[in-house]
Image 1: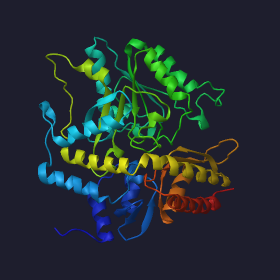
Image 2 (image 1 turned 30 degrees about the vertical axis):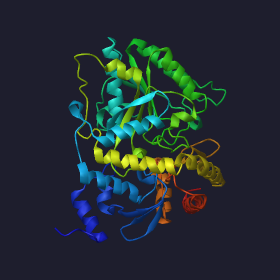
Image 3 (image 1 turned 180 degrees about the horizontal axis):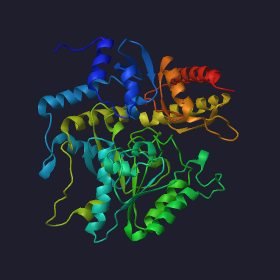
Image 4 (image 1 turned 120 degrees about the horizontal axis):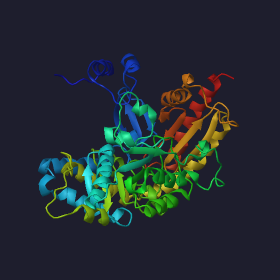
Length: 453
């Protein structure tokens, strides 16, 4: 079969053969897909050659930017030597061992053991199973997992049970038992109708109340993204995670930090939790570990957990076919060389500060209710009335209108309802931030003019 090249042919083949994830299938069949064909640096091109600023690093993950030949060459070299080998039954391969040792130098103190997966959902599934397995190996039946409303931890069935975004649950239930949710530290729309700092961080105190309601002897773990991504880039107040950590320690509840989006420099630190100097028992990661060049994820865990699950005459009965995939691990090692060599976490802090400052300019548009972010992670929330925080009618799809206008103007961002989110590659420069800001401002202006008065 001759390879399809022309856009019209690709669109037709897509309509006939592909099932897209997280997509409005009925509408997509009519409109056809948006086909990305090339990428370089912070830019991508569609199949017809139009260039866009990739304001989302593809799917929050292309941290080092597009077109890095050193990663492709490292993966190709490994594939030529040994493309795949299993990690089951005590088998290993050099790249997976080397990657674990390298990550041990970069992860927060105390997290020196690694279990590799193919992506974020598998990583969180692993963390949940590790939490339950650990306590049962200690003779305790602690199995419940507490997550947060608005949290996103993947959409495989176990991960979906922790994900606190209702739209992902619709018609896929029932979810797994043993999962419950508490409010997130969403100061702009506080679930307790309080105002920071007079609130005394009630959203963190709710974790203790939930543990006591359920019974501390039944609760195994609490999972949280350092900054909620899909939930709308929710940055917690500075006191939040220290208070969460203290509560977890008080009741012997494992603290799982979901760093799938925030890990590997996105917030200006290597890992998001380092912004608040807390020390989780496990970190789940993916995305930025390879910058999306090949699928890879994992869980970093403490020696306490490792020693707790290591027993004579027992087998750890958990794993995936592609654990420690040598080609993916080789890509990750090359990716880490770039992140370290170019100090991209540092660039995310420096240029991220400039981006956050420039985003404050969007308050000049009347329908911008809140601007928030950290490092190279940002959100602009749109409202019908800024004073009352009244939301737009869902039928207006204002966020989708702005995202479409931005794309027409050469900028890719993501609309999550009426929240526009941004996560550009960590290589972005100040002039490129200016380009991103100008293109988004044009989109806001065009949509604001069309809104009903």
